[in-house]
Image (cartoon, rainbow over all chains, first blue to last red; front, side):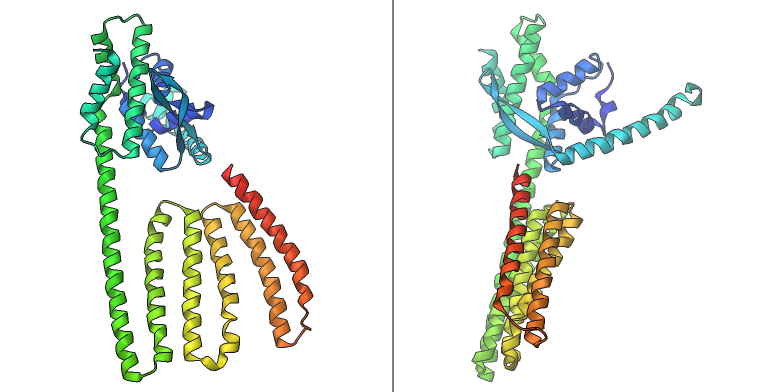
Length: 112
Length: 261
């Protein structure tokens, strides 16, 4: 199991990437992270909610209640805004740069 | 006790001390539906023991207290804003009281009641302008440019009315020309609006304001030249200008509808 800390600084970008594909609710996103990482990253819902709240305040996403229900409770969906899309593109290109640098710093030049 | 009821009890335990704001109630419902989703996924995976399902679902939430703490922080922020607003109101009332005293004293001493009234009205306008400028700080901070446009428009209007009233009282001999200051007011509206729009990334709105500004400059040039006697005055100039204004209005409506969509 990999610590969820590896996502620190990029939790919002991961969520935005999922929302780029379409609207989603909290559980869907935490489930996606767990599934894509093969169960290696177990991100807690509280972490996702804090990220949601921060992104709503920064107008990167918007929330709305869905019509579907689970056991009598409505699901709260999130949709990405135009500002969110711009933010995602900026952060994903930043990640590509950082990834290259970290590869050199952690693995070394022999990786070439 | 059913699993649903146990989740509800868990949420009650954690949320009952949080102020029941709309945000908190939404969050509570959202967490409840997430718990049900988790429970269902554990059931789908073959887990049948409800105690295990309950524990695993609660564990998946993580540190819920951390999120609830941020609600408390938000509540504190609201309190701070309310205290700040109360202070500003008290200061405004105190300043208005001092202005009124100064107005009455000056009027009684000079007996110039026909002029001193501008102290009271102008003072009230300046207090409102100051409050609006203070109110603009969070608008700039949180990039609420549409509201900022409205605030700047109101400030500009009040400022020009104050200057107009001062001119009416101080230089009454020029009263036939003093109204021209409102041309400057309209120009200031649009120039400020264009700056805000382009700074805030509202480029389409900025462009619409720019079109209005060009139209206004044409109108003011015509009126100016006619007043100076350079060209002959004729009311029919209104027709092409009205057509152009209608065009711009239609553009503004289309932009507003698109923006809303």
